[in-house]
Image (cartoon, rainbow, N blue to C red):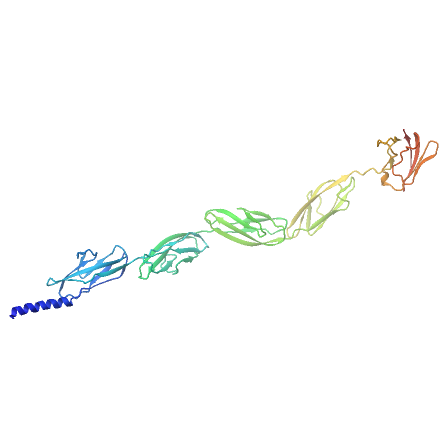
Length: 432
């Protein structure tokens, strides 16, 4: 073998040795969708002269040149990347298999929340998701000041002031890919509920004065729970009569045009009603010219008559009419009542003969010798005589029942004597 042939063979063996030990390799960074992936040539090709990259897997090494390359991939997925290396002798080297690049998906940070009223708990409902279904972690920042306030799936927050607040939710995947959602909510001002009242008494109207303020908008509704089972829907003052004494928890709930509610409860003491009665010495109907004394008794401290004629609980009245009076006790309780008085003309009770003649024919008129008011007297004895002086009728207890039907027509004389009364004498004509 000549020396020339020897060197040719040696060169061929050297080339084969270099190819057998040449390694084409790529390293890259792990990224989330939207971030830039950095590629690095990790090949051990001696005397590398040119590095060319196929970053979009189209078979052409025309996307980048150099030891490093970068690319922002259009979506979250797994991508194939290849490299071609040319050494100083013009030899080309390729990777035996593509380099796989994983671009991790971003979570979609989302949540639901409604504007609420001051004093209410605001509820945040997490609706975040990620396309590969992996687990997510969360960071809530209720006032977007950079401080994490909660790390739960859903969150609750009670704001201590009304106004607009910007909050943020950050969702992070297990690959540390994250996204944020910012949202502004409004915490509406609630009204200020208050009322004043004056302690009163059972049976009297208690006044409850609404002193509420809307603080924002206007008051649209007020609901009174008066503590005795009665509800009142009134935007102004309430007049209510409690039927019994005691302590009642009165609650006022007021609503403003924001739809926000505030309530207040106060204890209202109701005193016993005045207990009283009245009586009359001579009744409520008495004879004209006489009088009756009215006496009012009870647990009151003062009494006033409507006609301003007296402030005494006893009063003598001699006139018919309608009278009213008002009583008040030391608690400020009052009661009013009234009554009517009537006077009558005294009845004529004189015992006297009513008819001057008798006609006992059964027609109901003058059939008997009748004495007016006879029933008011006792032991009335009647004797009847004819014109000759003969007694024709005698009754120890006369009852207006002598008709003379068994006697002849003519004039008859009578004597009527009742206990304690003078004798009544007279005559009557019997007509047949």
